[in-house]
Picture (cartoon, rainbow, N blue to C red):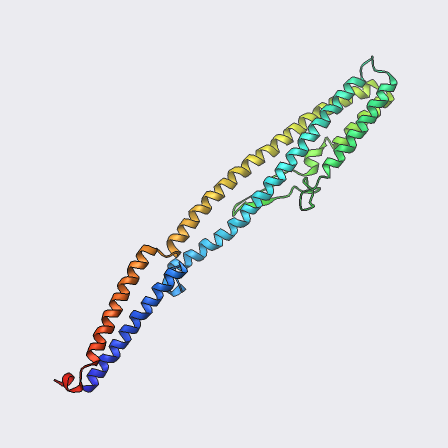
Length: 276
């Protein structure tokens, strides 16, 4: 009989310890805001949280790439506006120089301005971003990743933008300057045609950069929405529902107190009372 009583007491102590552990666990869930304290609590949920965390980390990098690419596109857009203005000015000057009313002194002035425009173009080609990298890559266009299966170059390479027909835009302008300085109307006519083609080429590349900007904006919006969805899903799996947890804490506390009170009452009995 005494052994049986001892066994019951041992089992009751173990039960109360289990209740106390559950109570402590709930308190930690409330204070920490997380309902999963160990992977063993819910392996499936823990694995999903890990997967979401990996995706979120990747999306942070992709979003940073979108921001960098948008800054690059914005800078490239400004460069292209300047290039377009310079090319248009170069063609206007060459047209003016080809007129019969333009005298040699005026042509010399125009040739000098064309040379300056060519130098400005060369400087624009060499424009660098905030990291010191060329806005327009000197080799292959800079490809950036914006999703697990999406990557592209937001800005074309320098050769793609500033070279047409095997010659750079600045070379075409310098050719026009030489023709103007020499008073060679045939060469000036050829330069006017070349400059017109170059202006059209620049407009096409400018539009291409603008399309990249719009695409990046849509990608950024999509990543932001996915980020919200993942955050909500992770919260539903990982975060503590305070209303439920507090109610559970109160119930656990009442159960433990009742068990402790009953245990204390039983322990106040004498051995004679237990045996009878």
